[in-house]
Amino acid sequence: KQAAKQDVYQLFAEKVRDHKDLESRWAVLQETRVEYFRGKDFVSFMKNHPELKEILESDRDLETEDIANNLLQKNLLVRCDRVVKTVRPGKKKLSTWPAHLEIFPERVFSENDAFFAWTFVKRRPLWQTLLSFFWPILTLAICLFP
Image (cartoon, rainbow, N blue to C red; front, side, top):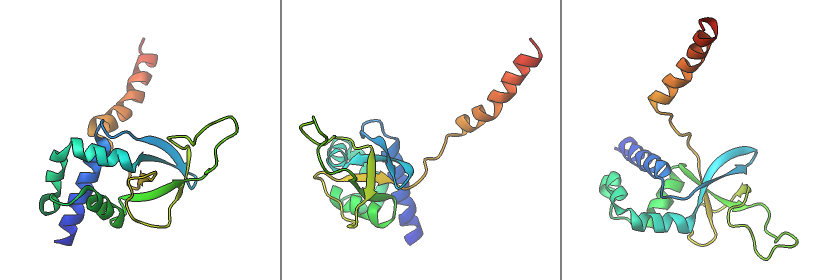
């Protein structure tokens, strides 16, 4: 039963990550490029798309913070913080989307000034895999048989 629940959260995380309405960016986290989002964006996204909670089956009635904490516990998300915490010269405030992140020690969801990075690799669709296989063959065929 625990494995099935893990799969439900994995499916939920994939659906949320692939959704166009959750604003996310790319940054460097410990020498690795990761896709991340802000806590407040996740809360507003879940308010606007309550139908996604249906994927969670028995946990669909949980609050947004509890769902995010479950994602953190299942290592589908990791909480991050900006590396540079000082305002650059000539600027008035910190950047909204920092380019460099570090792992935050606490694994608790926070809506205020917290960033969360996805820890799983996005699955590529079958058509994309097939296209990447046939594209070089097509190019070679065009070059050999003009």
